[in-house]
Amino acid sequence: MKHLLLLFTLILSTQAFSQNNAFTFGEDLIFSASYNMSGVLTEVAQVKMETSKLNTNSGELMRLKVTATTYSSFDSYFKIRDLYESYVNPKTIKPYLYNREIDEGGHYKFVKYNFDYSSRTVKALLRKKSKNFESGFWDQNFNNSFSNNTRDIISTLYYLRTLDIKKAPIGASDTFIVLFDNKEVKCSFKLLAKETINTALGSKLCYKLAINVSGTSIFKGNNDNLIWLTADENKIPVYAKFKIAVGNGELKIKSANGLKN
Amino acid sequence: MKKTLIILGLISAILSAVLSVLPVFKLAIFPGILALLCGIGALILAKKQVSSTQTIQLIFLIVILSFSLSLYKTIFTKVEVGNTEDLEQREVEKVKEAKEELLNIEITE
Figure 1 (spheres, helix red, strand yellow):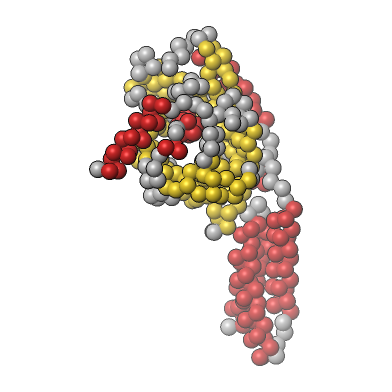
Figure 2 (cartoon, each protein chain N blue to C red):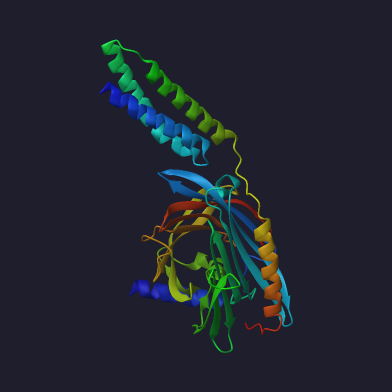
């Protein structure tokens, strides 16, 4: 009962009062991704998270861009050039357009979601390479309805930073609905602890959060996927540990520019 | 026994050498250690039997070379992103498409 009450309070506080005081246009975070090979962590790729402005007729949107690029030494073996982007309302981090274009070792996939808030529908496009079509691509179109707080994976990650975590007690959790691979999946974040870790930005007091995704095989294990957000106004993701179907690894921040606070 | 240790040691030493030239050079340590252990075992047996140690020396030489190369790469290799022209091109296209698609949307709070 006590936990339920805490959870309810957390959800209320985060949903009602969350404002984006964490990041602004022009933020640039660079990470190094390491993959665990037989117990040895090897740096394999660079991950970049950037924000920029996009003007429309009715106002401005924030473009959240995440790219993953393998280091040149790995390009000959398994080249990754992934692009994820989400165009969101800069205040509420509600997405309007999401693009995911992945090119991993020759495997290509493009996913696009157009969120229409007036009809509560998302227009989805899934594109794969195919020799059976003249264009070289096989397109599939879907129209799905979505619930009020559905976001894509990128906007969810940024939205997490806007939450007022400092008010949350240890053990509190929050669940988000994420549209991934044309399915709505529940993604929950649980505050495990507050701890100080050494990063490239210096020694930082961080919120240690566990990520659990139900209804998909993206992440493995229970509380094995962790993210550390700095316990300040910026809530920068400085470190992450992940366990996925093909192994495990970590993400470490290398640099952070254009921070809001 | 000595022959088995030499063969296993030689295979491990070669594997270690191969791994040390690849991007996963840090993994060279595992077969390298195995090769060293096999080499030491074979050396002890060879000393007892008073036989030739030339192949065993070769195992040690290959392991030393692979460890040196791995150590050099660990200290001096700087990781850098390769050619991202294609990705940048795709990014420009995506922004252009997004501008067209989002130009007339109504931004809600």
